[in-house]
Structures are given as C-alpha cells and as structure tokens.
Length: 220
Image (cartoon, rainbow, N blue to C red; front, side):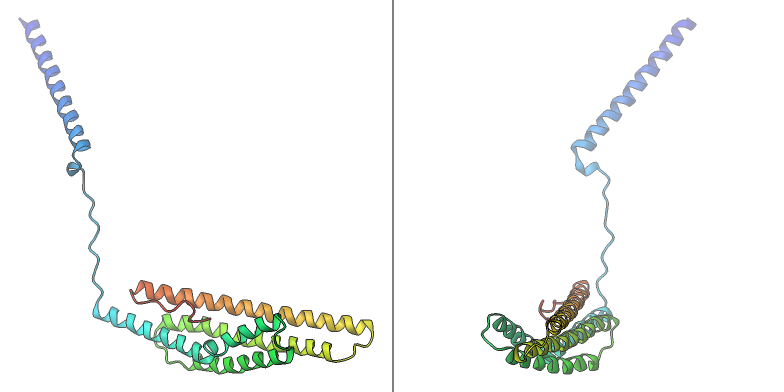
C-alpha cells in the first residue's frame, strides 16, 4: 500500500514537470511567432525647442550670414574671380606678367579691407566668433600669399627685363624666384584650409540648430 502511494506521487511529479515544460515551449513559440509579445523599447520623447533656443539659432544664422557678406564684399565677389581668371590667362600667355601683377595687387588691397570688415562685424554668439576667428586667419594668410606672389612676379619681371651678369647671379635669382613661389603657394593653401574649416564649422552649427546652410562658396 505504501509502495503504491509512492508510485502515485512520483507519477504526479512527472505529469507536473511535463505540463510545465510544455507550457514553456508554447510560450517560447508564441514569442517567436508573435512580435507583439516581445518586450518593446521606447525612445524618450524629444523635447521641442524652446522659444529662447529658436531665437539663438536665428541669431547664429544671422551672424554667420553677416560674416559671409563681409567676406564677399571684401574680395570674394570682385577680387577672387578676377584674380583667378587672370592667373589662368597669364599661364596661357594671354596677358603679360606686369598686367597679371596688377590683378594680384588689386586683389590684395581689396582683401585687406575685407579683413577689416570681418574684424569689425558685430558678433555676439560664441559659435559665430569661432567661425570668424577661422575666417580672419584665412583672410590674413590670403593677404600674405598675395604679397608674396607679387614679390615673386617682381622677380620674374626683373629676370625678363634685365641683363643677367654672371652665372652665379643667374643661379641666385632663380633661387629667390623659387623661394618666393613656394612662400605664396604655401600661404595660399593655408588660407584655403582655414576657409574650409570655417565653412565646415558654420554648416555644422546651422545643421544642429535646424537652420538653412550657407552657400558652399561663402568663404572662397
């Protein structure tokens, strides 16, 4: 009798374990076949921009536009295109070296005024100040590049228009010409680099605030 009771209890345990296992299998199948049973992950709600944040974004945009206008008025519109075109024409021997030198000097003088415009721009936000710092560096290096380019052209004019004395004199002149050329080309590349950094920073600030970007050639 006792043995029968033990066997009955064991049978109940086996049935209970089997039932629990079957239930777990069904639950697992339901999770796999019914995505609605999977745990849901909810992203935190995105806060709407406040009126103060929106006003600051508009101010940043306005100040960055004022920097772009200062650059344009200081040489970006009338200085750079004519200087660049004159360089191409000089390379193609369509204009003389003295004439090309006049374009270089004109762009340099105009850009000096442009640097002053940038420096005098009324800027309040730290974001626009950071952009202006890079644009000013670019402007000053561009002026340096144009000054060195003018000196390089002066050496070329001197070589073409005077009698070269000894062979040593000719070698020394060629070395000066090469040094001048390297100086203005390096300064120009540094100017382009800083202008690109300024543009990337300005566009990033505008993207983050949801404002319209500047023209990609704003600081060229």
